[in-house]
Length: 334
Ligand code: KG4
Ligand code: ZN
Image 1 (spheres, rainbow, N blue to C red):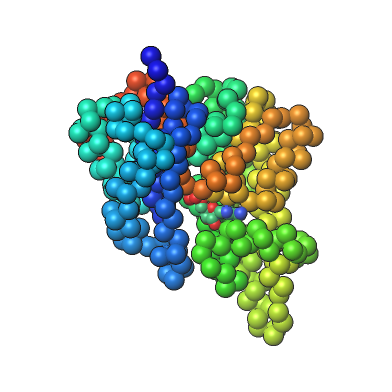
Image 2: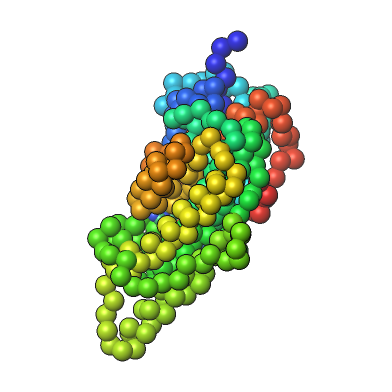
């Protein structure tokens, strides 16, 4: 037959997105409507506000995705939707839209795990070679995921407290920077030197887990102590020192694991994959170790529906279809 076109839908957090992709790897359209402006004044994502924005936008975003792909409904073979993890009220908007379309058009529906989506954002540029290791770093996740084939995910390490993006956002907030703070810390870090000693959470020997709450507290302490002494801390110095600690631990644990379990490719995934310091450090270490590194373009690092359709294509090919009782699940295991 002809090409398989999948409509992807993503509404797990604060981006309403719809995309059309062909044969799993060609993006025909990827429309993203960010609600960041609406959440900024609250300093973070407000679940109720997010749900309401998704409801208001979803139909228009889907129509725009079809239009930009020059497709009619007859050209769409299946619907792929994020059904977790995420904010349950936000997830439900996308799931309800996807079910309605699948039912009305009589086409297959597949449920996609949000993190699988982030991982598959890497596949638009290059085909996967297994086994591979994905370092997933986002606002809600910090995971080392080993894949021996498509659709198979083994979590070898994960955060025991804050996710990396969460730590970035909290540190940014303490420096008075707007939400989401990750990009601001990243920018400041390029302007400063890592001159302030901060801890590195290595955890027990042999552990591939992460912990970032101690580092976050250490940053808050530095600010607090300086405040009490009437001193000022250079934001750029603190940002650079924080980023150095984060990047060192992420890179070191990733390559320790690769030494133990050799892989054909290393993938970086999730919103924090946009981080300049992390991208550069992984790239130079990967070159030294002779490991192929895949990093999505900036536009595919943060939440989008193209990556959901990309991961959904694999689910669809495996014949794992969802039905009308598909539900949004806030803490869905990978
Ligand atoms: O993947 P994502 O869009 O949403 C989740 O699934 O969580 O990730 C958003 C997170 C936020 O915490 C944001 O601050 C962080 O990614 N982020 C960054 C950068 N760009 C986005 N963190 C560090 N450096 C960046 N350049
Ligand atoms: Zn995400």
